[in-house]
Length: 283
Image (cartoon, rainbow, N blue to C red; front, side, top):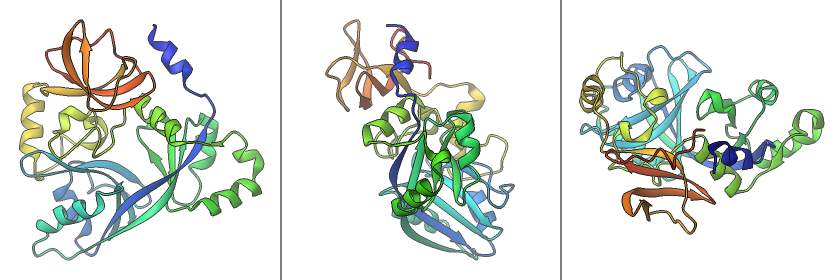
């Protein structure tokens, strides 16, 4: 089946979905310099009200968490991550907080994830208070940070014209959009044994021109040598009956492992030596 058939099958109507996130707040005089020294992406130049994604690594180069860093003020940053990874993130940061003037606290929040937006919808919603770009820019995805469902309902009722194209989505809608966006989830597609080059996130979550940070040596060495990871995350057609954790079989050979399966599409870690082009879906 042609690649475009899969993307055409995706619902074209924008939707919202309630999303639980863990939050790590880093505040204090040294918050910016501290985070810049610990995260894989550029934080030193992140301006107030803007955000970016970054990987937090162990010194070995393995991934602790994927975070979105939102600069609230010059001395206050909010890092949101998958539910269940807030404490892990805070503990990893705290291990390196030596003679640093900042405080690290954890909490949780409920976001409203807006997905499959048109350019027009994106332009309307990105101006909302606490609206954050989600995933890659090209995906036109937005999270309304910390907005509970009752606020969203009041907002949609008050402005029917603005919200009329959105529907309430289910988990399957969200996961389908996430797979086609080639966006991994911590604990599922990316684990503590993963390295950045496996994830497909280095284009949005890693800076190759910043100064030192824990785990940089592995990242820079693989990049400078043009070394591919032993396996990498790809969007593929799923075999009927495929399940997460099962092997990806092509021409009778085990070429990888399914990490997320949604109907007939999936994210899978494919071995470097395998030619999976006949299965891959270009999102």
